Length: 120
Image (cartoon, rainbow, N blue to C red; front, side, top):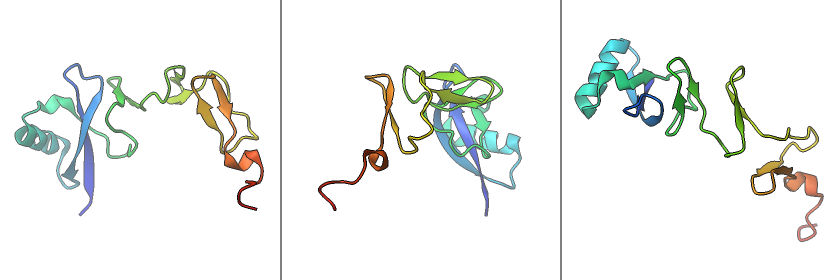
């Protein structure tokens, strides 16, 4: 049996607090009514997010789309791509780099640092 995923929004209808499942044969109205019956949380606070497996606690709901959780305070949301962007672009040659929020820059990952002297 396939399932649908529903995101539970906070009282302000802006942030995902939880995510539950519903059978795929149920209609949207049936799923929302079931969620309300089981959890006591109003049906309008449940949004179908089946095709968005990345949606989870902390994701934002704009009223029409979900935005991913902001990964770092300095990153801004590109509203055209619906993706968070660092204030400094990731250099193309740093494929396994990671963002250093304290320094505001990308740091090289293990593969860019060269061979590990402890493991020849």
